[in-house]
Each structure stands twice: as C-alpha cells, then as structure tokens.
Image (cartoon, rainbow, N blue to C red; front, side, top):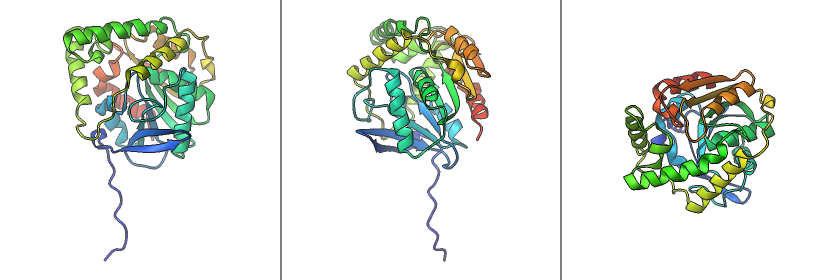
Length: 287
C-alpha cells in the first residue's frame, strides 16, 4: 500500500477555479489560480469596472492548459478590500505588492484595457519582475483621446440601461451584423461560472477608476523605449474606448513588439476573435 499523499488535481477550467484571498500590507486581495503550478505564472490584469468574473474563459482556459494562471481583483475592486487608488501608478504599486506577496520574482503579464495601462507602469517601474507582456485594447500614457473614455463609457451605459443590455455589448463590440452576435456570445461565456461568483464593483470604485484613466490620458507620455520585454499588442480595428491607433502607437514605441489588429471589431476584438487570438497568445507566452 502506498503512503504517498494524493496529488492535488490541476484545475484547468476558469469556471471551476476557487477564489482565494491573500493579505498584503493593509489589503486583502481576492484572486483565482488555475493551470499547472511551477515555472513563471501568467498574471492577468483586468479592465475598467471588471472583477474576477469578467475574463473570457476561452482565453484563460487556453493559456491555463500549460501555464500557471493567476487573476486578481485590484485594491477596492470586487472582493478585494481597501479603496481604489487615484492613479494608474498606485494601481501598479498594488499589483507589485500582490505579486510579491504571492512569492514570485518573475511573471508574465496578460492585460486588457485599464489593465494594460497598469501593466505598462508595472513593467517600467519593475523591469526585472516582468518577462513578457500582452497588451490588448489599451494605449500609452498621454495617448490621444484616452481621456474621452469617461464620456463614451457613460453614454454606452445609458444605452445599455435603455435596452436592458450589458454595457459591454456597446462598449466592446460593433453594433452590426457581426458585432451583435459576438457580444451576446461573449456575455454568455462570462456566465458559465455559476458558483462562487465575485462581488460586483461599487459605483464609487468605478468612478475612481475612470478618473485615474482620465488622469493617465492627460499625463506626459512614458518612455516606452525602456520596455525591452517581448510584447504582444492586440486590438480590434474600431476601438471606441481606447482608439485603435493607440495600439499602433504602442507597437511603434515598444521595440520588437508584435501587433495584431482584428478586422470589423471593436475594443473587445480579442474576445470576438478568441478562436484565433487564444492560440496566438499561447504561442507568444510559450512556457
């Protein structure tokens, strides 16, 4: 009879990943992890107003097949405690605190929208921590029209309320024959997790995030030539939240970066084209 303890089964489905908590400084962070442990983890930085429940499982699960994946709620968001900071720099500081509290000295970062702004600041401030970066639906500090995201967001929230829809259907997807069904399919995928769902973001936390994005958009540009990590940039060709031209700007300014622009799609281009984007992201991140 064997005396060896049973090995913990590897969770590879985001819908089944348990929610954990970690105290770091004066904040308790809510996070989920899945995929095989060992090696460099991929830490996911989520978008404006999003919680742990806002990641597309088709992307997470594809990466978690061979990589240790960690998603987390920033300070003051969802089930994490504390208050949302007033700047992207402070959000990057919190992300650093969280990653170090988990015990990691090297991570890959997968980011979307607001998360991509935080990821840039983290990589610039702590270049030795970040090995590879995925920047999707995002733009650089001081990027033209980033500060207009506030007006766009509130207008689309109103449109969603009037049509009893999820605001992401308007904010992330084109309102056309390809965008509308892609939006509905994306929202359905976000509902696949039925148990242990996250607490929604509060209105005040959401408003603080918007102000931080506005401040980021109106700030002097960062020196992105300092980013030497392999970087994959992706977006749709019609991003109304963070203009698609800013993805091209990031590509020009980050030496050696790769750029994917998906046709006939918006801010959520990577979700609309998840069937082709997920393998591209897996290949880029490697092991």
